[in-house]
Image 1 (cartoon, rainbow, N blue to C red):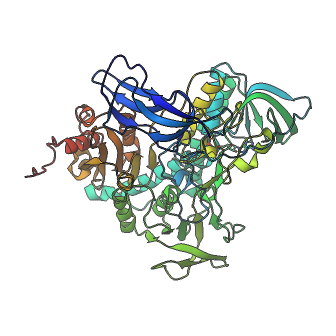
Image 2: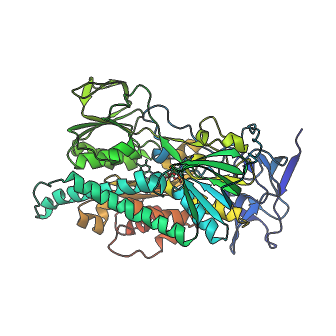
Image 3: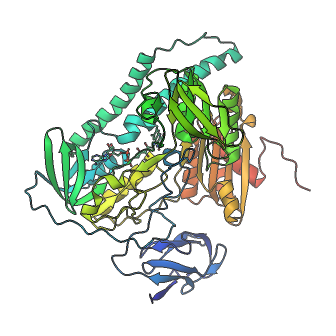
Length: 604
Ligand SMILES: Cc1cc2nc3c(=O)[nH]c(=O)nc-3n(C[C@H](O)[C@H](O)[C@H](O)COP(=O)(O)OP(=O)(O)OC[C@H]3O[C@@H](n4cnc5c(N)ncnc54)[C@H](O)[C@@H]3O)c2cc1C
C-alpha cells in the first residue's frame, strides 16, 4: 500500500491561529512537492502553504475559515514514486457533436497546468531508439509549432540563452491565432461594428446611408492586419537568432524530429523540446465537406462572398462572432445550438443582452436543436433539424460548422518520443508543462481547454523558463474568456452557476450600465458588470461583464482575483470618470452597500 504523508504547516514566522482563506487543491488532485496547497492570511501577510511531498491529495483536514498554526496537519497525501505520469489535463473532450462549445468556444476557466483532475495512471509508450543518422540541424531547444504558444516559447527560450529551432509547417508564423483565428476575426468584427455604429448614429441625428461593401478591399484589410503581425514575428525570430525550419515535424525518437518540407526531409536533433502543435476545427461527420458552401471557421474568414442565407451550427464563441460579422455584412443568419443557451458555460444573465440584440437584428436562434441531416444540392445546402421546436427543413446558401476544435496530439508521432497522448489527442502535462518525458514539454491548445491564445502564450513562457532551469510552475488562478460579439461578453474565475453547483457561499455585486454616464453617452446601456465575492473573506473570486468593450474591462477583475483583492480594495480604487471601467468599482460598491450612483432601498 502506498505510504500516507501528513502535510503540516511549516514555520510561518511565529504566527498562531492564522485563518485559511483559500484552498488551492481538492481531494483527488495530484500535487508536486512545494506546490501551494492553501493560502493563509494574517493581518501582516498572505502566504501559501507548500506541499512537503508529491502525491495525491487523500484528505484535506481544513476548510476556508479554519485557523492553523505551525505543526497543524492540513492534508494527507498518498505518496507517489518518481516517474509517475503527470496529471491528466482537466481537458474536456474535443467536441464531437454540434453545439458543444469547445476550443475557443469552451468556457472552462481552469488551466490544464493547474489541473484539479486526478491523473489516470496512463502507460507511457515505449520510445523508439535514436535513428543513428547524422542530424541536419542540432539544437538545444526545438519548438514544434509556431502559434502563439510556440513562438512565445521559442522567443523566451532564445532570450534565456537556449539555441532554439522553431519548426512550423506553414510559411507564416503565428499559428491559428494570427492567421485564421483571433486576429482576422477581430479585424472583421471591427468592420461589423463600424457598420452597426453608422446605422445607430441615426439615433443621434447623423445619417450615413447604406454601406457599400467592397468585399475584396475588406479581405485585403484583414490580410494586411494579419501580414503586419506575422511579418513582425518573422523579424523578431531573426533578431533573436531563432532558426525557423519550415515543414511538418514528427518525432522519430525522444531526441529527434524529422521535418518534411518542400525541399525534402531534415533530421533535427535536440536536447529539449516544447510541443506546441495546437488544434484544428472539428469537422462533423455526415456534412458534405467537399462542397465549398460548407465551411469551418477558416473558410468563413476567407469571406468568399456574402451569402443571402447562412446557417451557423454551434452557438459558442466562434459561431457567434462569425454570425456577428456575416449579419452586419448583410446575410440572413440562423444559429442552431444543441445546448439550452448560447455560449454554454457563461452565466445566463450575461448572455441575455446578446441574445436580445441578435433577435432585434433579425438573427434567428434555435436552442436545443441539432442539424441532423445535411445535403448539398444545386439550389443550396439542405438541412434538416431535430429537437423540440426544431424548424422545418431549410435550404441555406452557406453553412458554417463551429462546434469546437480538437487537439493535434495524435498527429506528431509522439509515441516515438515516448510521450503519452490521451484518447482525445490532448497531451497530459504537469504544473511545469512537462510531459511524462522529462525533457519534452507541451503547451497551448494541445494540452487542454480552455483553448485560448493567452493561455498558450502564458504556458509557452513557463515551459521555456523551466527548460532553461528556472524554478517556475503554474500559479495563475484564473484565465479570462471573452466573446467579441456585440455586445461583448467577458468572464473570469468562478461563475454564478458554478458557485451554485459547487455550493459555494458567494455574494454578488451587479452594476447595470443603465446607470453609467459613459454607457448612456454611447447609447449602449444594455450591459452590466457583476462581481462575485466569497461571502466569508469578501475576496473577489469571479466576475462577468456584458457590454461594449467588456473584453478590455475584464482584465481588472482578473488582476483583482490574482491579487486576492477584497471588495473594499476594488470599491476604494479610484476609477476615471466617465468610463465604463467605473462599473467595476461600482459593482463592488453595490456589494458593500456604499453605492451612491444607484438607489438601493435598505433592507428592513
Ligand atoms: C476563428 C477563431 C477565433 C479565435 N479567437 C480567439 C480570440 O479572440 N482569443 C483567444 O484567446 N483565442 C482565440 N482563438 C483560439 C486561439 O487561436 C488558439 O487558442 C491559439 O491559436 C492556440 O495556440 P497554440 O500555439 O496552442 O496553437 P496553434 O495556434 O494552433 O498553433 C499551432 C501551430 O503548430 C503548427 N503545427 C501543427 N502540427 C505541426 C507539425 N507536425 N509540424 C510543424 N508545425 C505544426 C500549426 O501549423 C500551427 O501554426 C480563436 C480560434 C479561432 C479558430
